[in-house]
Picture 1 (tube, chains in turn brown, orange):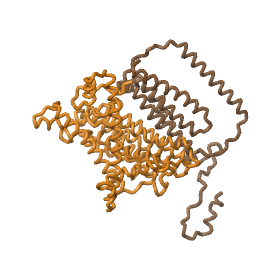
Picture 2: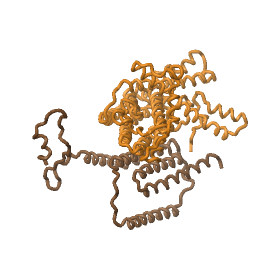
Picture 3: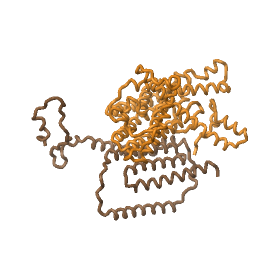
Picture 4: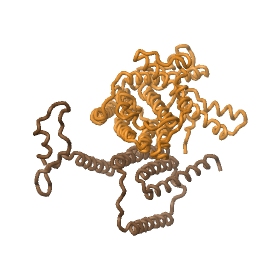
Length: 209
Length: 382
């Protein structure tokens, strides 16, 4: 056994263990922030597995998209809303956990059966290394053009959704009743600090309500 | 798993240290595998040491130049002209007590600075100082750097969250928002360069620029891309005018507030190594990398020497290292001067600049480059 293959074996074992235990931690840990950070670790380990398959471009893209964008956004969202408050007890928590655990176990067994019954080609096709970048580009702009463009439509939809959610003034009319809806933020009226304000202005907030 | 592309396969000229080392070791009766194993840690160690020394030089420059800008003297007692001052700073940080705040999350608090530093050091993998003088000529070159630099905000968010301090959290969130916003125009500016050189590899990018010395550097063909890249690189390094995540007047010190001792030193190292790295990448992508303003082939021809002669190879190799470092430190000088000259932008101005100005300009730059490449393939890498 050469040094290279030993190193490869050790790397594979470590990365696989990181993926398996990391993803278990993502699901099972009670602290959502830990779950999110572990998810980043899992993504990185998957990138490492790609690297071991000689797919360096896919590995770098995995790091850039999943770790650099998706995971950072997840963390961002968690940290913006994460308030330390006690969760209310959910009724029938034990039964729910049992059911979801059963579904997951069933899915796992199904995948295991597929894995064991499929005749895999061992060893697989030899990796083409750095030429993979060119090959991926050619495929994306020829036979995979339609899925590629459809993915961009999906992104456009999510972008429009985000803009609609962020710009609350778009819906100034209630869709159901047709009445005007007051979308103004409840905030203190802006008055300069040192200038005497007329008494009528101070009650503006109450009268508007 | 290809870690090192075999340099023996490359036919292009230039000093090949690995080849010489391997041959010399085989001369002592070692197998090629063992010789390779002995060689592997050497460039990594060398680059690590170079990066740390680069930081020391950088800190000294920062102190001296800031003093000159403000008409002070700056450090002067530790060594001649205060050159030992950064070393004293480092030693002080080494001896300081390592504090983890009582209500902080100890594990994440410790992991944060490590996650910030590791991607920055890993990125040195693709920085070339000569034809064969880099750790690894991976095919995805600059893309590896872009991917690695996107890991950093996770470390910043982690340390900001784990400190259990509102200023730290705000600093971490700002750092993440800033780095996401500026990564996109940065990548688009790099993409225009990559499109011209038909390769992601840093070696190919430099070789494509060095056909006619200073005249063929990318800065003349990509002036807008150069400016976009420089602005985005400053924002990624969190240098003034973009040091929002650690704005002293607003956030104490941002995500670094609760840190001291070596953990703080890791942040400090990370930010300065990142600055040198960005300057090196600007030099590689736009200023011809290790290239001399006049092509060395012409100079060697003028004095009647072959480029492949051993003496000429040693001279050109050293000249390449000197040129790369010189260009990088010129850019570092500009960055330091900018830091002590410009005021800080506001967070809304920062995001406006990134999304509403740099992103459209970078897209237009990419489109124009593609058009020029089709129209003038001789000048824009057909």
